[in-house]
Structure formats: C-alpha cells, structure tokens
Length: 236
Ligand SMILES: *Cc1c(COP(=O)(O)O)cnc(C)c1O
View 1: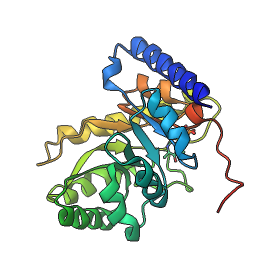
View 2: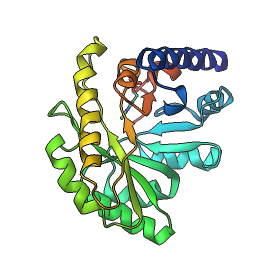
View 3: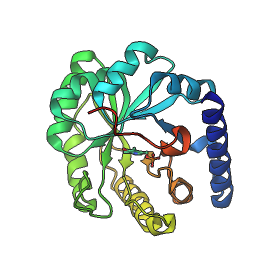
View 4: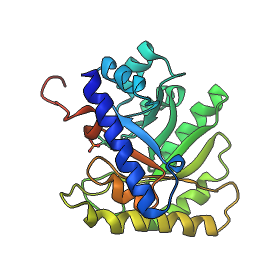
C-alpha cells in the first residue's frame, strides 16, 4: 500500500512538472492537495511519508477523526466539501483553508467562530463555473457582489476561488471553465476592493489537473490519482 501511494505521488509530481514546463510556470507555484476522503489514517501516513502535507477532506467529521490521531501540525486539512453551519466550529478549529464557501450566511458563521478562536480563517469562494444543477457554488456573476460583502469581515481572509469542474473523460473540455475562473480572479483583483487580493485558484482533480495547471491553478485536489478508487459501499 505504502509503496503504491509513494509511486502514485511521484507520478503526480512528474505530471505537475510537465504541465508547469509546458506553461512556463514554476513547480513552487503549485500546492498538491492529497484528497484523502473515505481513506484510512494509515494511507494519510503513507502519503505524508512520501512528502504530502496538505490533505483534502469533504466531511468535517472525518477531519475531526483524522486530526485526533494525526494532529494538525504536520497534517494540514483543507475542507473541500459542502459545509453545514452546525459544523463550522470544528471546521474552523481544524482546517487551514475552507475551499467551499458559497454564501454570505456561511461566511458570517465562519467569521463568528474564527473570532471566538482568535484566528483568521483562510477561505475560498466556490464557483459553479459550468452552471451544473447538481453542483454547489455560486455563479460567476455572484462572486464580486459577495466578495464586497465579505471584505469587512475581520477574521476571514478570502484567498481565492475554487471550482469543481464537470466530470469528463476528456480534460480538454474543462479548459474553458478553468480559464473562466482564472479570468474572474484577475477581474476581481483589478477592482481593487479593500481587503481583497486573491492569490489562490483551487481547480483540477485527478482527471484534469494538468489542464488546470496550464490554466493557472495554484492548488490541485487529487484523490483517486494518489489513493486509488474510493469505496463508498462499506459505510454510511
Ligand atoms: C473528491 C474530490 C476531489 C478529488 O477527486 P479525484 O477525482 O478522486 O481526484 C477533488 N475535489 C473535491 C471537491 C472532491 O470532493
């Protein structure tokens, strides 16, 4: 198991390197999130041994369980799934970044909990770039007005934008969506909104991360490509 994860990570790094060289970027610009949802702690440990420090999870309960064993000093958890308000307290306590903020109410709730902890919480706005019915996230047009409302909140820092692109066998089909997200970030930064200067683009998963890097991703979220297929049949 360990060696497989190790070689998977090595392979992903090679792909990252290749995509960086195609697009004239430096590998230092890319943060690899190992998406460890549904996977046991031992697999996170194996990934950590292979150099992974950033882990993506989509359920707060899972972050709680894993952080209890692994701590949050060496293992940095990113909340990448839909976040319910009653889970915000734990999410703020244990996540270095929340990628899935999609409403003012949720952001205010994060602000409140972060303030209690004396923390400044890094967040991203989740954008449903392709306008898929089944997906969470706000529209491209809703991003700027929401950002203006978030700007005064002292205990959150909007670091950038995140998207979950459509599932497709052909990653080239998602290039347009990645390009749109990057353009949105550039446009909003150009507005010089007080307190808002975004530098993170969280986009690209196992099937399409090289295209995402070519289009400006700073954070890629790779699950299957590191840990193998997920098995949802066992629990829940
Ligand atoms: C599960 C998940 C991923 C990883 O997906 P893979 O296709 O396994 O790489 C990335 N981002 C989000 C938001 C996810 O929920």
